[in-house]
Image 1 (cartoon, rainbow, N blue to C red):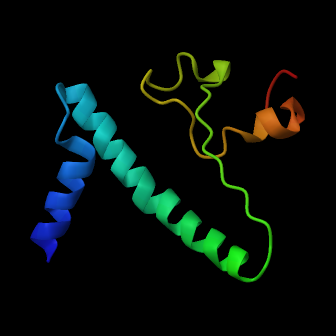
Image 2 (cartoon, rainbow, N blue to C red; image 1 turned 90 degrees about the vertical axis):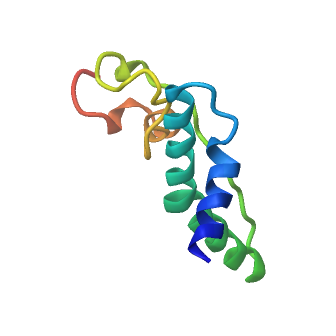
Length: 95
């Protein structure tokens, strides 16, 4: 069973990688799916089944504050959208 899971992950996220950077990106995508996407979809289904509206999005805009702080391959970290949705008062530092 584990071999099938490993093969599935490889086929979905890494198989077409042509460089070490693409392998890294595939592994980061797989980890993100496991820790965020799969559980978010599950919760969204529960809300849907209870009759509530469900909205699902993926935020990928790289904040300018990430320059020099995060590696270039990081687009948006968990929670990065907060400043874009609610504004800069929720950020520490110069406002």
